[in-house]
Image 1 (cartoon, rainbow, N blue to C red):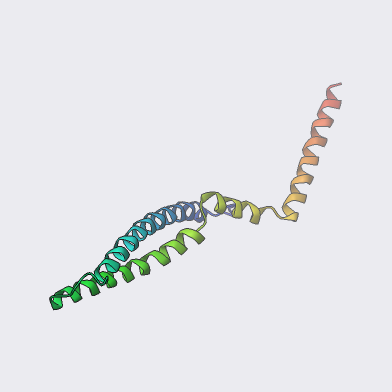
Image 2 (cartoon, helix red, strand yellow):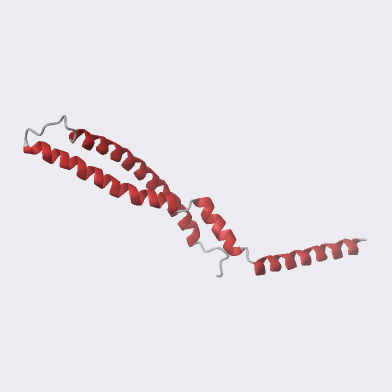
Length: 126
């Protein structure tokens, strides 16, 4: 069967929509983690904090690693959320791919034929 719109497009619509939603949620949580770990790391490295034990320095390094991991999660999720099209954009792209000059001319010819047929029927009734 020759489909006008491939059924895979309906699946991709739902997948892209869910992917974008998940990416936005993950990006928001990673942005909150970036802020939290960034503030914590800056606090751990102020001159008012004296490292009395070696474990305090390792704790500060842990904050830095968590901060970097949060950035590494945020950046790709933000880019996915930014560039993944939503449902309306995907439908618009599919419609635009079907709205070719040939298809419009064919539709106009078919409409002209239908109108001519209706006019013939009206004239036959009179």
